[in-house]
Picture 1 (tube, rainbow, N blue to C red):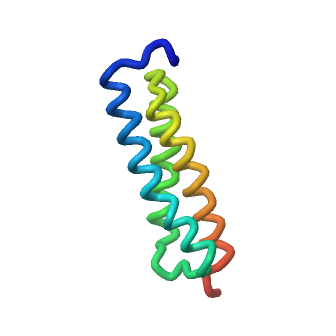
Picture 2 (cartoon, rainbow, N blue to C red):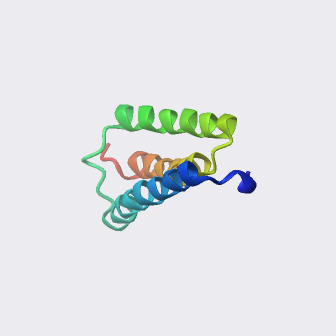
Picture 3 (cartoon, rainbow, N blue to C red):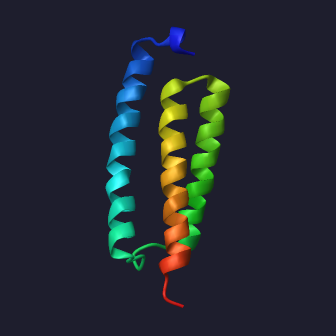
Length: 90
């Protein structure tokens, strides 16, 4: 995989870093404030499932950028799903 890095994959890696990094402050803020009122569980669940499919697609395409970005986003979004379940007002 690492021997296949070309200029297109470098663009993908930059995009992966930017979009993944942009998502992490939301996870941190939600953890600190425990405020999940702005999240829709059904919508975020669909987002999570979409990330799973993007990760599978990245693996099948042997795309390092897609694998890295979607693995990190999968973990982050799973964490947010746990927060939504744990912190939501019943």
